[in-house]
Length: 205
Image 1 (cartoon, helix red, strand yellow):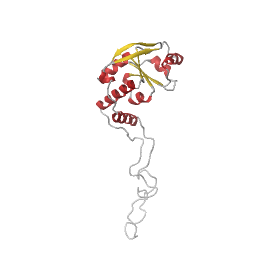
Image 2: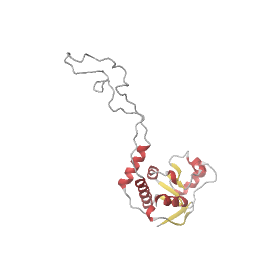
Image 3: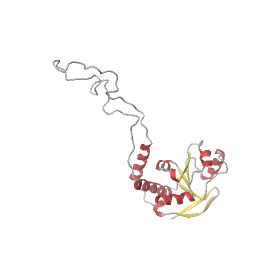
Image 4: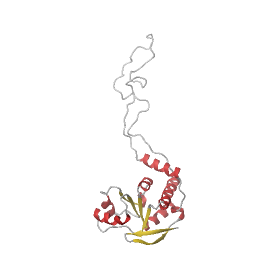
């Protein structure tokens, strides 16, 4: 299939891309699973609850084992008691990762890229660079694309673009190797250079 390339002045030509990578059917359940798994992988435990060993007190047996008519008890910090420890406490080391194998991950990225093209949200350009790492230069270059929420994907890390975009909300720059499903789904427009499109093909074919 062919992608129309544009720049600040308008259409500049076409590039030939793989139907396997950029023409795949949209698999919504797979995309949802991979996006959720990716977000879960970045989640950190933020709660700490105490086990029965960590709760203060409870070192003495509250009453003798037999003869009181009460149920047997060894500590007042048992999980059965009010103020006792938790059986399965939350911990900062808690791992929220979900397993997604490589084939599923690549299939989801192919599905996302193809759907972005169908929705006219993927913009192909021959090259995307600026002369100096200045925010003003990047704003001027993006003005013709008519969007304030964009992910710029290049074949390799462009330090000038990264520095120019870091103070702009909604603007993100990454190389193909760092492109993830959440970023691809979350932005209004995706600008992909010709070299980046070829790199996607090498990775996802």
